[in-house]
Length: 407
Image 1: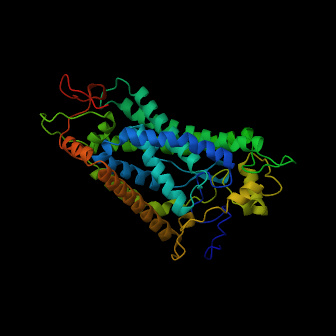
Image 2: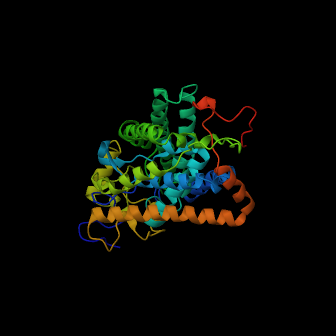
Image 3: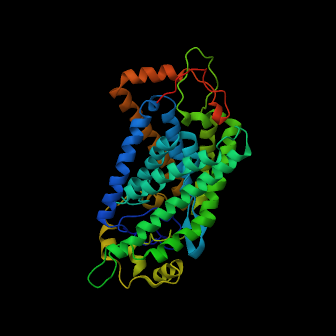
């Protein structure tokens, strides 16, 4: 379907003003690879739901939806990378620090699902891979790096800010490396009788350097700065939020203390949301996510060659890529509603719609869980009415001596 004047067709991703796709789209991974990645992600989703089930009745679910929305908006800000491509931050670092890895992977997965279903940002067949790379591996990497670097540091120590920066940097680069490996194994495992690739066309020796060059520098630096900046902001304005992932059980006899409330964080999200039109300033496609028409146009092939370390793309569009790329048509592809003429306003409108969908999904999920387990809901409400500072290892006083922690 052709776009309005000034845009190329949706199947081409080069040179348009709308946001390029920045996740693995349909057609770049074989069906068997997609099945493996869904199989790897599904147990993590299930375990995360089980581990956060009780906390979803309290303040964790509003925080989860808030960080899912923040991740969604963050990924709309495209950054120019070497070779004429673009990248973006994810927001997984600060999400893992505040929510813990299990709730964080649910938040980022929710954002990625909304992007794929409604905006065509990432594929339906590759959603399992995108969630595994960014939500699952990214969350655990960020959480582990932060805990390791900040071990023994006081609550106000600068080392915690450094730990937050390293957590974001390490998480986004691990996600990029996993995507590069998934791209790079496709031509080795899936090709026709002539050796032509069926899906992603470039091998590991090209995919890994091409993907990592931009993430080790610009995209990684953006994630690090954002993680450190938000950590500092929350520590100053909402210090209670930085203890949400400690899973401590409050004691009813304690005096209520100020726990994290997402008010200031929600205000920060609103400010970032209003700035989303700036995300289309950087034009171009993310590496390895070109549309089928880009492989047959002279301009497209030239751009692919430059971005791929001077390695020319295959002579014809990979047949599997061409077939699967048509699998799903999103209602608002590329964050460009067909009824809005202004690219910037359409981008902002799409961002607002996506955030609304995330909040609605979180609300619906909470209602379903409350309906399914009213006893646990009453317990969580009683627990949520009391709170206490962080544990001693995290710079706070912790619960009274002998107090049990929730497992």
